[in-house]
Image (cartoon, helix red, strand yellow):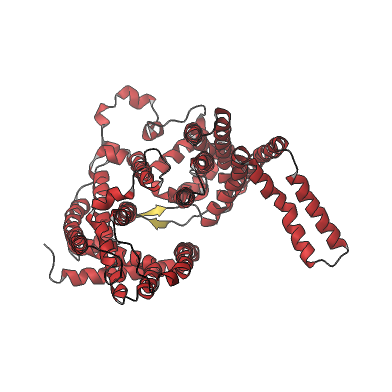
Length: 581
């Protein structure tokens, strides 16, 4: 039973939580810069397109009407937003902040609606620049003041319904983890499978080059997409009043019905007794098994760490178990993956790229992910037991144990890269070359990660989800690892896919500084040096493709192996000389 005045309490609670989020972002400069860049860059791009095309629309009568493709595209974006918001709910908002205090002060309905209000305000803040731009551009292009009202109204309904639906799905996932032993035990694998299935299905609508692609018009039957008709009110664009009213009705049902359902699921989640995975199926384990099988080996099952023993194996198993128990700490991997994946999809959609990009992109992305997943914050991951680790484990065993889990995933990198390259149209030899490059990047990235993580550790826990003990790698460590793996990785896959382009880019080390020096030199030594640089660029550009591939590729491989060896030794020295303060 909700308390009297619960709606007002929920609004105040949501507003307070929103302000707390804003203060936290303001105090974190790196996070603020990333978020500001993620909002401003697409806004500036859209502003440029608006300035280019909107004046051409002003005063015209466009022969265009809202059709199933437009409605389906809007519905597709809504489905994507719901999925991402559901993930945020499961990982970051499955319980309210200060849940003990909140749940003994207000009703679950107030807590749920307050969370929806806060999340809606956060989403609307991100969308505000684009929304204002669309409202102003639509009003100017069609001389329709109603657009100034329609865009904020549709945007608010659109975001609120997506947040509510995301809360329902997120609470369902969290409830399954809390109450079903199988889901709790394998939540990392199940969550990764769901993500891959969703994005695989999403790409079917995004990439028309695929032989099994589906038109977004298929999703035009989803009533949420009918809000597109409401956006066209007051403009010369053709719209349907039936669809507009149907969209508003669907949003109302989604918000009201979703809020009611979210309250029921959240109450069961918050007040129910979670399962203890460590106690499940204990009776089925024989005495012989308990005596022979190590606890860590059982904990990471069905994974295992072959070929290594002793302390090295223990460190590797702990790294796997930590990643399995706290998958939130690996969220830093998703930013470059989504960025690279989005760029890849955009290139395909714009016709500037094809499936041939898939093999090289997968080789670099998967190689980097496997190398960065376990060793980018080794000291911080140890937490309170770091003093014991420094004295009980040798540096060689510790660093080797951090590298071993990454190498376990090298076969996965190899198989996925080989299949992607063959699907992209590469021949067998080229596909094998890309596969070997992916494995090579895995090895180099795995060796680099401990050294970078030891030089830039994060000891303090930050709040990711409802855990206060998650210590993801520092931003500078992640960025440095990306640069050191992606740049040579891109050059290596480029030697397979487009060697002429790599040769042209490499010749820039002579042409670019030579051009700069020529522009500022007035004769003498600078002019001679600029001419030498230009000659260097010309020499590189004139190398035969086969010789350039073999020479530059061999140089990159040898340099990568040397860097991996130096990084391994550097991590050993850092471990042996590390002092606690």
